[in-house]
Amino acid sequence: MPLELMTIPCLKDNYAFLVHNTDTRETIAVDVPEANPILVVLASREWPLTHILLTHHHGDHIDGVAKLRAATGAKVVGAKADVARLPELDIEVTEGDVLDLLGTPVRVIDVPGHTVGHIAFHLPEPELAFTGDSLMAGGCGRLFEGTPEQMWDSLTKLSALPPETRICSGHEYTLSNLRFALTLEPENEMLISRIAAVEAARDDNTPTVPSTLSEELATNPFLRANLPVVKAALGMVDDDDAAVFAEVRRRKDSF
Image 1 (spheres, rainbow, N blue to C red):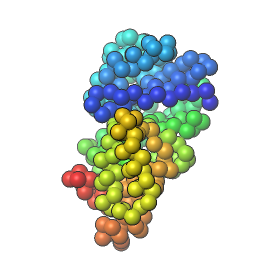
Image 2 (cartoon, rainbow, N blue to C red):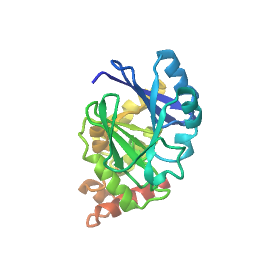
Image 3 (tube, rainbow, N blue to C red):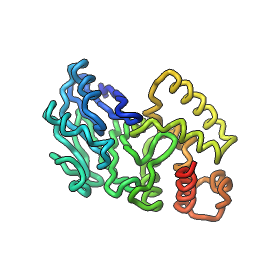
Image 4 (cartoon, one colour):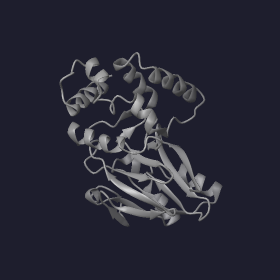
């Protein structure tokens, strides 16, 4: 696919994303923590914005929507279940809906946990998934509204995507997340190597997002709560996966 992805730093540690079709010149944005950094890129590239996709209602993902919509006329897409807490939506979506954007299917996945109305967007052909604050680089979002069982189910859905999928998550939390992961798996060689690469990237002020799902499966403890090595590290060999996930989340909350 002739698609170009841009990761745009916003606020203190947020990311917005632009995806552009170089043939049709269509462009979509995913999450809008603030409008100005996105508008700067659109103007410099002369990219017209057609749609704004929202993963969830938190202000650090939607506060720039009104300004960006007013400046571009883009249509806003978000979860029907959370319509009362999102900016005015032009397109309301639910689990399993497929949008035709940028000349490629965009599949909606329901991923509650961080919030109860959280959704993700999966583009199978360019192998992209926009996961907001559900699956994150090296971690997952705090459970502000949902239950551990809901979040584990959401992460299990995302884990089933093709391993080469690029995971576009909402924050630059990667290094802290991976340093926590090391407390559970200090001998995980792929984790040790990833931390070194992330440290080098951050020293160069380079975003560590997107990551690949294969990286997450190998190093992200929230996706690995079903594995014997993680269960053993927590002393929960006989516990079910959701309970192990809940303990990993509890420990990360106080890390």
